[in-house]
View 1 (cartoon, rainbow, N blue to C red):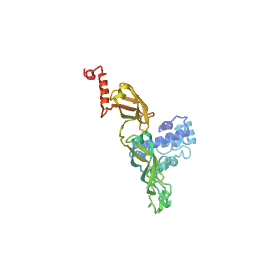
View 2 (cartoon, one colour):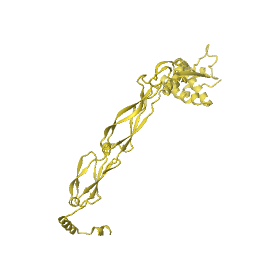
View 3 (cartoon, rainbow, N blue to C red):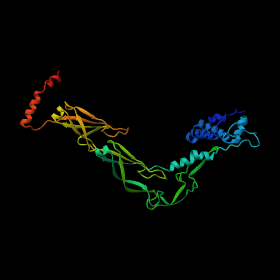
View 4 (cartoon, rainbow, N blue to C red):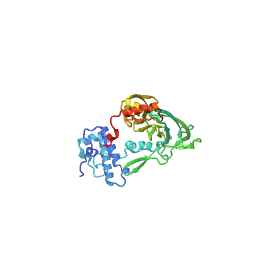
Length: 358
């Protein structure tokens, strides 16, 4: 006599499990061990039979009640039901039409027929100042949209697929169970074109030029890729349109230099401003000026940080603006200026080279 099988153990569930939990456990195991997904694997095939056997009993409230009262009545010596139990024994239907349709039919058919449209790629240049503050630009692209004549169907008249009868699925008998696959005749759509659209030639798409408004976010960097969802080519079979991807190029600035979210600028000052100190104007990329206090005795090459005056950061906050000081010497000097400079020279109490080259 064959050993009593633990159907709960086969499905990996406890005895107090609900009907929905039994169904969920069966779905998971059926997907994993289905022969179509494990071609030539005899162990998977036997495991799949066991899973179906367990589900056939536990998914039926009456059979499950009988099994819980006396599992020995369900001893199996093979694929068929236990002989001699009642008039006919328990009859097990291994077709599982609804659940197999759900696992391998309708959803798979929809995925196979509905396809996302292709993405489109283009490039756009912006100025340094536009990248700093953000802007709105327009770009014209050639994209495949839904045909205006047929609405993307590709046909003015359709009929049911003769092979699948309009279901989009074909069932195949394999031993004691059925498998469901998308109909190869109609690609899973359930329809065949009776009269193709004359405008798009049956493709359901029409190529046309389209001008799109593009919002360039503040802080965009050179080489950034913007993605405009759904503005690529139209999909097929009701699938979504692809995306439009725009690579951004940021043109160099005459005197600003960018590193990440920080900005660097060379600021020339006079000898008097450097020696005595002053309030000086530092330019910003937004066209405004920032008043910075230059301390007395500032040396050439000294760097000052203007916090939060750089580019907006994608992580939040802003970078900094760094002012690098250059002391600008006069190109022409009159006698009075030269005399004043001589007085300044005599004011030096130490030789700066002696200190620097010790």
